[in-house]
Image 1 (cartoon, one colour):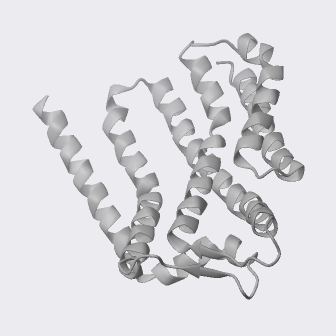
Image 2: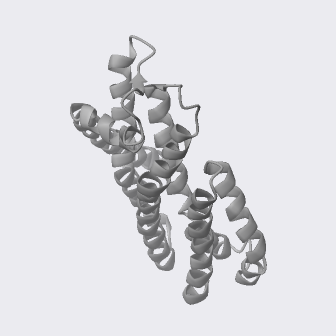
Length: 230
């Protein structure tokens, strides 16, 4: 048992070193990161609208918090790799193969989902929210709130895009069967539009833009389950 704790400690130290380098790099480029995170909102603002800081400490803590968040995201693949190296010796050959596929596919889908939310959904959402106001009122938006909202939406879409893997995993551990997953298609379609209504502003186009990819991801999960013969 002591050997496992020593090995876990060694891999944790490696990850913390990686996280530290990512944090230093992210903080060095924090101003560029700040502009990129706020870009979907900035492109919708008019000349009279402003982003403001409501606390004096935000001049330091806001870039630092953003740098830490970006560092965690950047170091996440390395963390998963170290975790995988720790548990891999206890797995069978087939389990190792499936595990590698899940890890690589999960990272790809997370990045794809984050980009989808950042490039497509956030500009639509911010544009609707900014335009949906009384004409003679000007916006003074809290930059901290705007950054938090942007990062949360990117995270949500990154997680939503894990749906195909979730379907495969549930079948793999025999919690559900592929037949059961196919039988709830209509409910998943309704659920996708409910998620679209919750995440998107009251704009039909935005809701469809969320619901359709979500349902397509569910269908992709069914296809992967079928061809992988789980």
